Amino acid sequence: MEFAQPYALLLAALAIPLAVAIFLPRRRGLAVPSSAGVAKLRPTARVRMARLLPLTRAAGVGLIVVALAGPRIGDANAVVPAEGIDITFSLDISSSMSTSLIRVKQSRIEATKDVIQSFIDGRKDDRIGFVVFARDGLALSPPTLDYRALKEIVKETKPGLITDGTSIGVGLATALNTLRDSTAATRIVILLTDGQHNTPTIPPLEAARLAAALKIKVYTIGVVDDATAKVQNEIDEKLMKAIASETGGRYFAADSPQALAAVYDEIGTLETSGVGREHFERFTELAPWFAAPAALLIMLEIVLGATWLRRTAL
Image 1: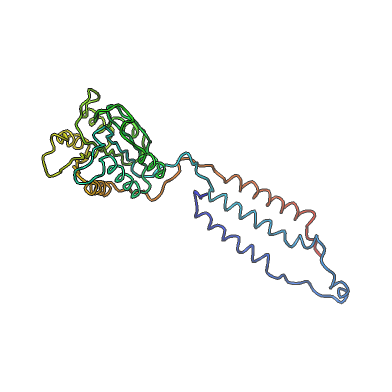
Image 2: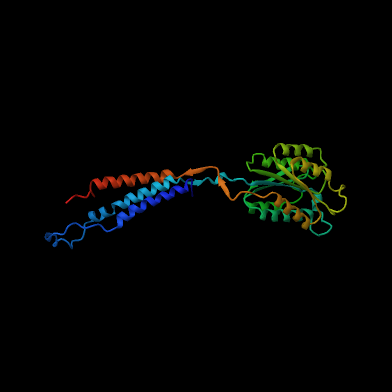
């Protein structure tokens, strides 16, 4: 629960004088000789209740203060990052991703999945989605804050889920579709492949122009065997750079898990979230649940004070 107007709670200070008035000892009436015989008599239940009657008023005032502060509970189905980043990974799972990198015994896809999971661990308050592509594209997770579930999805991803091939345009378009309705201040796609576009599907540059129109930035990563050598036979670097440039992103080449981790670290540095915590778009207002009993308590105090618990003058 939170308060829409938390400073209204300062009005509770008004209850202090009331509490003092309740608990300060009262001046006794004038003693007369004839009262000595009844001085030791215990007060009746009615008298004791009359002394506590002001507490009813104090409780009513306290509840009114809480109601004015606007207590409310956020709708769990409406949690979004206030000004965070929505990120979607687009991972090539074509058969070539099963081959090992020259410098390590680990396959390209396993090395990539390890780095993606580490990247997820380093984010906070940013929603992250995950899609894979080969000849076709497949969205495995929309942007989410459930990092644990997302990491499990990434971990279980393997080549062979969809028809083999390398359709970079489809991979990008599928990622864009997960971000189309996002209201985040910044939306980015991180697309990774180890090959060239080789299917007669969505042209990659058309998908890049769509990303630019949607104001979604695309970072492209090429997994190669030797980043210092010419990689034209492995990666269409010209195309990858054009996709990134069209959207305001950057292209990176990586030839080892360490280099890949460095790429993701750099992207993480470039795209930092300005959100402190998630907020709720919709609320259930609780003020009426405090205002109603407050009114009843104050009315009860007035009615009892004027009838059964009324003080009578001597």
